Image (cartoon, rainbow, N blue to C red; front, top):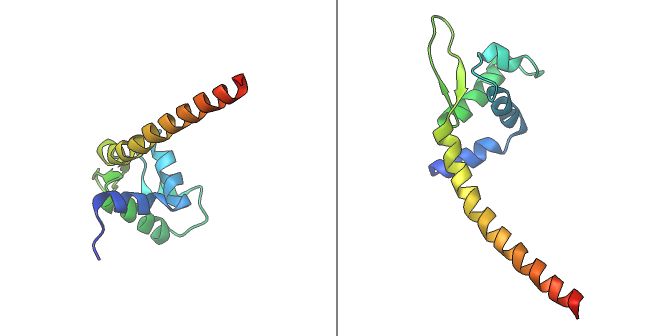
Length: 108
Protein backbone atom coordinates (compact mmCIF):
# COMPACT_ATOMS: atom_id res chain seq x y z
CA UNK A 1 0.00 0.00 0.00
CA UNK A 2 1.43 3.38 -0.99
CA UNK A 3 1.64 5.95 1.76
CA UNK A 4 0.64 9.58 1.35
CA UNK A 5 3.46 12.16 1.60
CA UNK A 6 2.67 13.16 5.19
CA UNK A 7 2.63 9.52 6.32
CA UNK A 8 6.01 8.97 4.68
CA UNK A 9 7.41 11.95 6.56
CA UNK A 10 5.99 10.87 9.91
CA UNK A 11 7.22 7.32 9.37
CA UNK A 12 10.70 8.65 8.58
CA UNK A 13 10.62 10.80 11.73
CA UNK A 14 9.68 7.82 13.89
CA UNK A 15 13.27 6.55 13.96
CA UNK A 16 15.73 8.13 16.43
CA UNK A 17 18.69 7.68 14.09
CA UNK A 18 16.91 9.56 11.33
CA UNK A 19 15.92 12.32 13.75
CA UNK A 20 19.58 12.57 14.82
CA UNK A 21 20.62 12.86 11.17
CA UNK A 22 18.11 15.68 10.67
CA UNK A 23 19.41 17.38 13.83
CA UNK A 24 22.94 17.24 12.43
CA UNK A 25 21.77 18.74 9.12
CA UNK A 26 20.41 21.80 10.93
CA UNK A 27 23.99 23.10 11.03
CA UNK A 28 24.43 22.63 7.27
CA UNK A 29 24.92 20.07 4.56
CA UNK A 30 26.95 16.92 5.22
CA UNK A 31 28.21 13.87 3.39
CA UNK A 32 27.22 10.32 4.26
CA UNK A 33 30.59 9.80 5.96
CA UNK A 34 30.10 12.92 8.07
CA UNK A 35 26.59 11.84 9.00
CA UNK A 36 27.76 8.31 9.86
CA UNK A 37 30.57 9.46 12.15
CA UNK A 38 28.67 9.65 15.50
CA UNK A 39 26.85 6.34 14.97
CA UNK A 40 28.08 2.80 15.40
CA UNK A 41 26.37 1.79 12.18
CA UNK A 42 27.78 0.71 8.84
CA UNK A 43 27.82 3.12 5.90
CA UNK A 44 25.18 1.01 4.10
CA UNK A 45 22.91 1.26 7.16
CA UNK A 46 23.32 5.05 7.30
CA UNK A 47 22.71 5.20 3.54
CA UNK A 48 19.41 3.37 4.03
CA UNK A 49 18.35 5.89 6.67
CA UNK A 50 19.31 8.73 4.33
CA UNK A 51 17.32 7.14 1.50
CA UNK A 52 14.21 6.96 3.73
CA UNK A 53 14.60 10.65 4.59
CA UNK A 54 15.12 11.51 0.92
CA UNK A 55 12.09 9.54 -0.28
CA UNK A 56 10.00 11.21 2.44
CA UNK A 57 11.10 14.60 1.14
CA UNK A 58 12.78 15.66 4.39
CA UNK A 59 16.24 15.99 2.86
CA UNK A 60 17.70 16.57 -0.58
CA UNK A 61 20.99 15.45 -2.06
CA UNK A 62 23.16 17.29 -4.54
CA UNK A 63 26.19 16.18 -6.48
CA UNK A 64 29.62 17.78 -6.04
CA UNK A 65 32.29 15.78 -7.89
CA UNK A 66 32.29 12.33 -6.20
CA UNK A 67 30.27 13.43 -3.19
CA UNK A 68 26.52 13.71 -2.74
CA UNK A 69 26.00 15.94 0.30
CA UNK A 70 22.67 15.96 2.08
CA UNK A 71 20.77 19.00 3.27
CA UNK A 72 17.44 19.65 4.97
CA UNK A 73 14.40 20.26 2.80
CA UNK A 74 12.48 23.22 4.17
CA UNK A 75 9.42 22.34 2.10
CA UNK A 76 9.33 18.77 3.40
CA UNK A 77 9.58 19.91 6.98
CA UNK A 78 6.96 22.62 6.42
CA UNK A 79 4.28 20.04 5.62
CA UNK A 80 4.88 18.30 8.96
CA UNK A 81 4.95 21.63 10.79
CA UNK A 82 1.66 22.73 9.19
CA UNK A 83 0.00 19.48 10.21
CA UNK A 84 1.28 19.79 13.79
CA UNK A 85 0.27 23.46 14.02
CA UNK A 86 -3.37 22.55 13.41
CA UNK A 87 -3.30 20.22 16.42
CA UNK A 88 -1.26 22.66 18.49
CA UNK A 89 -3.91 25.35 18.03
CA UNK A 90 -6.68 22.96 19.07
CA UNK A 91 -4.85 21.85 22.20
CA UNK A 92 -3.91 25.40 23.17
CA UNK A 93 -7.59 26.40 22.97
CA UNK A 94 -8.59 23.41 25.07
CA UNK A 95 -5.94 24.16 27.67
CA UNK A 96 -6.99 27.82 27.78
CA UNK A 97 -10.59 26.74 28.45
CA UNK A 98 -9.42 24.32 31.15
CA UNK A 99 -7.36 27.08 32.77
CA UNK A 100 -10.34 29.44 32.75
CA UNK A 101 -12.54 26.74 34.27
CA UNK A 102 -10.01 25.99 37.02
CA UNK A 103 -9.77 29.71 37.81
CA UNK A 104 -13.56 29.89 38.26
CA UNK A 105 -13.40 26.87 40.60
CA UNK A 106 -10.69 28.53 42.68
CA UNK A 107 -12.73 31.73 42.96
CA UNK A 108 -15.67 29.83 44.47
